[in-house]
Image (cartoon, rainbow, N blue to C red; front, side, top):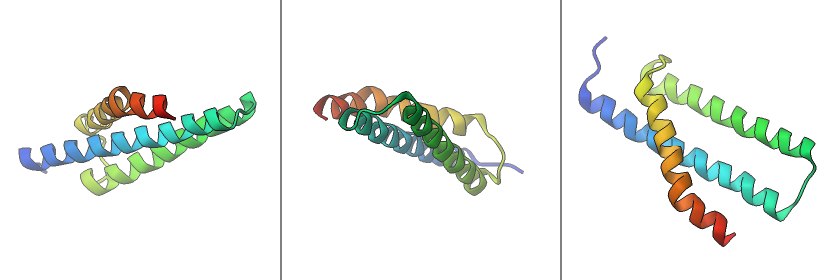
Length: 97
């Protein structure tokens, strides 16, 4: 099955948005840790919950946009979106909170 460059580019941009959404979710967990200090067991549970949510969302994204096939540009887009958010708006939001 052939995928056009336009479709791949749009999927990459959508993946960047998903990665940024993962960054927002990560900030929610970080801000909750600041607001309500917890023990190490609850931090581990929060980390597992974060990665489970990200894994399920990535799975559904792959099902929707690539028929469940793992495409490297999609994984790269998610990582790019996450790190762009984390090192720009994420730093600002975390500092403000």
